[in-house]
Image (tube, rainbow, N blue to C red; front, side, top):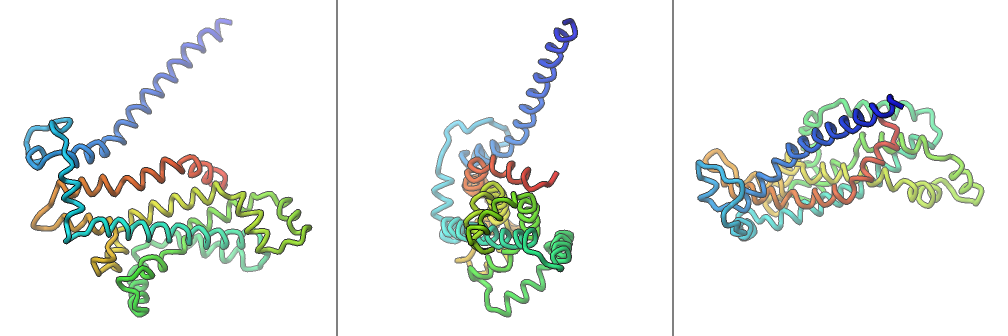
Length: 282
């Protein structure tokens, strides 16, 4: 009985320490978002002031209005470009990776292990190494400053394919056998039975792909040479140069650019965690 009594306070003490630590970490992680929002609502005088204030005395949306009124950067068009590119890349990457992962996990072939090994091997190759040959290929196709050039070359994801392969390897075979007894072929089984039960991994891969596509900078910078095809990250870089940095617009644009990412992450965070857990990766 005394052991149980002593365990109670100890456990409550550990829980309290854990909550304090997690709360402190949460504040540290939220600090950049606070700084961005604070500076986006501040006036130029407050941004240039040597004294720090925790919140603007008179929060203003003038920076936001100026951001969307700037015809040199066309931030609204850049947001639309990022949305189109991110959605297309997410949908197509999930579809391609799901089919490739299912094929590697379920379709009998002598080359399955070799293809899987080569797929995993590509994860060890830095992305920047493939930039020059990919750019040359895209340029020869005439896809510079085009939606195809922004989306098509980055559709295949070895990481997403591996995640789907791991998930489908643990998928109940009985469901597929039941579909085969009912006369369903491989494609119908995949689209009608397997895929509807893979929503968790699809949401996880889709969230990761969307975040990567939205935050991508170097590839859109190379391909979107026409200002009409700038993405939001490239548009933000227009406010910084070797001669001048428009601090107010950088922070305001960052606050606007973060919003879609936050919405996607908050809505799909549970599916993101569950999908990675069910993929079998520790």
